[in-house]
Image (cartoon, rainbow, N blue to C red; front, side):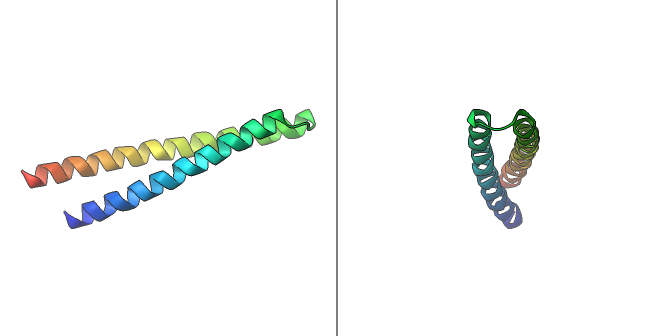
Length: 79
């Protein structure tokens, strides 16, 4: 049980860091879309930015599932 509590703390820290990265990437994508650049360069940056946004958001969703699973196991052990 102690292991699951420590695991939850680590997962919550990782989730918080990933949320900060997603917020930073979103701001960067908005900045790129408003910048005066060539269309090819802008589309290249937007494609990679959107790819990494999707990647990090799916990681956040997986981490949430792991946290929920750990909380369920902890609740069952406490009964």
